[in-house]
Amino acid sequence: MGLKELVARFKKELAVYQRVLKHPQTPWLAKLFLGMAVAYLLMPFDLIPDFIPVLGQLDELIVIPILVWLAVKFIPSQIIQECRLQVESEHDGHL
Image (cartoon, rainbow, N blue to C red; front, side):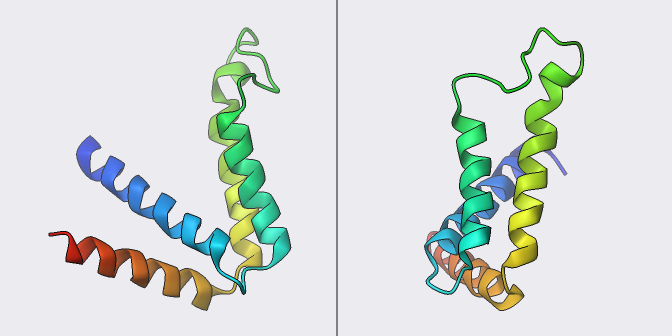
């Protein structure tokens, strides 16, 4: 998979989880974890400073996926599938 495909896939997944956040049946705990992941990504500072070798540079690659994984554990699979189908149908309509 090339970089272009990876970026396109990431954008689609981001759109899916944006829909999941807005879905009325998404549990509040899942919304909390997804919100924390977005907040951590957008924070102007790091909880683990970059000057700490290795961990400082990798904290986003560790913390954000864990938060998203925790969120997904609380989201019923049919909600994720429904949102994924909506994003796919929108994407297909733009071709």
